[in-house]
Structure formats: structure tokens, C-alpha cells
Length: 255
Image 1 (cartoon, rainbow, N blue to C red):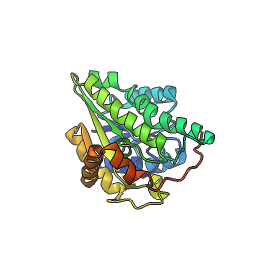
Image 2 (image 1 turned 90 degrees about the horizontal axis):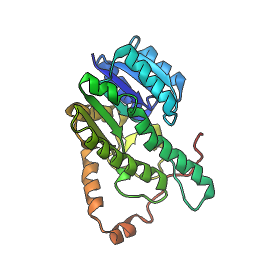
Image 3 (image 1 turned 45 degrees about the vertical axis):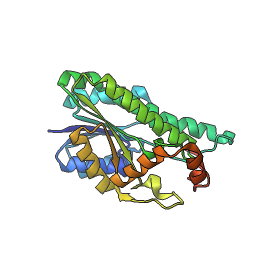
């Protein structure tokens, strides 16, 4: 029986992945800040879900959750570091500095804190998948998204480093860079979102990439073509094309 641990499971991609794996009969450890929504998932899949209400920036809480999951079910087959936050930020605004710190802590540090409790047990068990949900926003910096773009660029590089560290083991590190997925995170985007994909469709495609152990996947594939083109653009052309791009709204993030 498949054993899967997912962070950020209370909405969006995390919720869709939880439902997908639950429908496959998997045993799930689900983490998020909103305990009530985790309990709703647990009620939908009785006997399959262990809830861990926590903040992924709390490494001690994640360590305790990981230890508990391993004690109950053994080493997971798949760990998905999905928790993330997104908000428009401007470095010139002093009030945004805390939001910048929060985005980096959740999107980057939270990923490392998610994987850390499980690696030794997965090595001993003979392998598994560590899956990081990055973003195409990490390919090139977007205006008004200093924190989000930086956090996802950090996640992509971190996952690549981790993949190299674990290459000699049977643990595969999977980097998934989604394009636009219809979730609460994208609801407030005041700009067109090409190739927008429903979360349940995205979850099925993510799961296929995870099963293959793909080192790097862009989903949907059309956005992968866009990403390759963006990488090739010289700075002068990129700057002219994107300097006036619409910004994600600025707002306060919960502490």
C-alpha cells in the first residue's frame, strides 16, 4: 500500500493530490495550517488519513510529524513538499520586507524542513520519491514578485542539489514546475493565465511524473515551451517585454 506525506494539503494542488492518492487507496499523512480542512479530508477518506496541523516553517513540528508518520506506517514512498504562499511584493516598500521573509521561509525553507525528517528512513527502506513543487516563476524574475520568483528559483536549485546528493541512493528527487493551475492562490491574479489547468487534472499529471521519477517536469507541457523561450531571451529583450507586465496584488500575509 502506497504511503504518501503531503504538505499544504488543505487547498489547491495539495488538496487535489491528497484526493488523487486517497482514491488510489494510499495511506496519507496530510499537513497544513488549517486543521478543520484537514479533518474534512480525513472524514472523506476514513482510515486513510493522518492529520498534522502545522506550519512548515516550524521544523520541530515537522520533525515530530515525520517521526509519528514513520512510527505508525513506516517510511513513506512519496513525500510532496507542496506548501506555498504567493503575494505581490516591492522591495522599496519597507512594509513588504516581512512578506518577503515569510514567502522565502514557507516556499524554500519549508521544503527542506519537509524532506529532512524522512530521508534517513527512506534510505533504510530502499528508496522513494521526494517531490518539490516549484514554479515557472522561478525560471526568470517577474516584476512585483521579487519574493515569489526568488523563492521558487531557490527551490529549483535546492532540488537539483538534493538530487545530486541522493543520486547514489534509491531516493529520486522530482522537481515539478507548474504553470497556471486553478487554485485559491491564482484566483486573485489580475492578468490572463495561459493554459490555465484545473487542480484535479494537474494532480493526475503530477502523479504520473512522480511515478516515473522524472527529475524535472513542467506541467502543462505548453508552459515548458514558454519557459525554454524565456531562458533564451537576452536581458535587454526580456526587460522590454516584461517590465510593464501586470503585477500580483500586494497584501499582508498571516504570520
